[in-house]
Amino acid sequence: MFRLYDTATSEVRELRLRTPGRVGIYLCGPTVYGPPHLGHGRATLVYDILRRYLTWSGLEVTLVSNITDIDDKIIDRANREGRPWQDITHKCESVWFDAMSRLNVERPTLVPHATEYVDQMVGMIAELVERGRAYATADGVYLSVTSVNDYGLLAHQSLDDMLSGGGDREVFGAENKNHPADFALWKFSKPGEPSWPSPWGDGRPGWHSECVVMSLELLGDGFDLHCGGMDLKFPHHENERAQAVALGRDFARQMIHNGFVVDTEGEKMSNSLGNVANLLDLLEHYDPRAYRLVLLQSHYRSPVRVGQDNIDAAVTTLAGLDAFAARTASVVVAPADSDVIARFRELMDDDLDTPSATALLFDTMRRANAALDAGDPSAPGLVAGVREICTAFGLEFKAAADVPTEIAAKATALDAARAAKDFATADALRAELQGAGWIVETTKAGTTVRR
RNA sequence: GGCGAUGUGGCCGAGUGGUUUAGGCAAGGGCCUGCAAAGCCCUCCACCUGGGUUCGAUUCCCAGCAUCGCCUCCA
Image 1 (cartoon, rainbow, N blue to C red):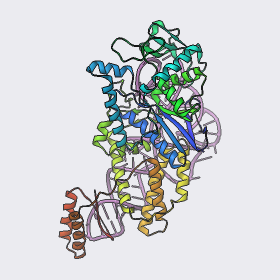
Image 2 (image 1 turned 30 degrees about the vertical axis):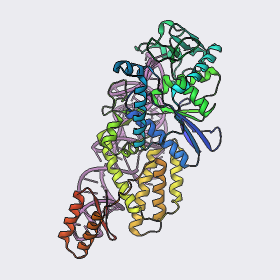
Image 3 (image 1 turned 60 degrees about the vertical axis):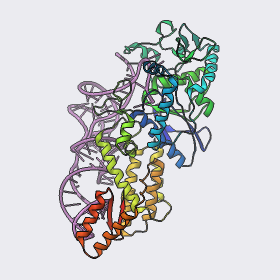
Image 4 (image 1 turned 90 degrees about the vertical axis):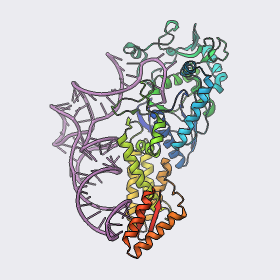
């Protein structure tokens, strides 16, 4: 029984699938107007791990993740830089998927673009207007939040409480709205801005109607799971849900949210604060697997601090994993230890307890090493257990690099020198290999080198 | 003002009403090794503060302190 925390009810509960054996997941994808930051990386990694685990456990997973390629921020940037907005969206999308592939994040099953669904969005908005749930003003079309009786379900706050205090931010379209919390479904365009025709006037989509239209169309009503970052819980996801509810349709059966990435001072990292911690920098300077490992070692709902220290620690840990992979490359394929697998499932099924599952991974690795040292017959099963867990995690071993013949020859020479007890030559050869960037490991079976 | 999260050993980071420890990194000791590397074993026994419940609380309750987030366009 697979259980996940449900944002709406604030409890961990069973994910009841619409169709047994199949799971449809919608992940709120990026708005393509800038380079991906660490928060984007966390969300995609968390849900990549979720997806891989569900797939590994035998479910047929359909993951839909959108690209929002029309948005005010895209227009702002296009104006600021004096270039076509498509230039920005195309470039950013390619940077995005390039970064994701470096993170070893599998491409979603479907990647719909907002601009491909504008007609459907207009259709949906028309229906909302028809049903009396939305209305046009001088600057756009708005959804009437008071017509959605459980508005605030995800925010865990009533409409009145939301409005009661705080919020010195500007309220969009305040002067024309029936209720201050009503939100834009359609925004009329100013001259020169990208626009699409609509019955109310040329304009562009407002509050993420694309997610509603695309999730319901591609996954169907009452799809299994909707996910995204904590910061999208309200108002983004609240508003998506409100649109579906106002349409009289079933939205996601369950909605989950991953925690923030915080900086060294413990503050949230995001674009709006201006302290963008670029994911591309991280990928450039560190083994991309390190970020995945750091996230695996903390729970997906907890805030995670990404700093030099824990990334460095993860890199060191990965070295151990790679050493294990190299050591066990020739271990015969065997069925994975059933206790390890059972325990792994138990942990992962409990709201994706990757920290405990990661502890299990290291424990299994240690036991496998000990079994190999002792020549114990349990070794192959434990090794297979490690491999299984890593597969479900999307954690890859560094592939053994092809060893050039002259390097292999030096390793052979090193062994010959050792056999002849010519340790000066052996040490010199080892230093030479290490100087060239090779990791040299000498065992009873001989010397192996790898990158 | 409303809602919510977090506070753990040298560092990161889980978890639990008590008995034997999360795990990773770092440090120290040992085994293995010609010496290393890799690996294995051992050590380092923490839980913001003040109350309360309890035979017993880091874990539950209350209060406080601190840090952080959301409350209209940020994953």
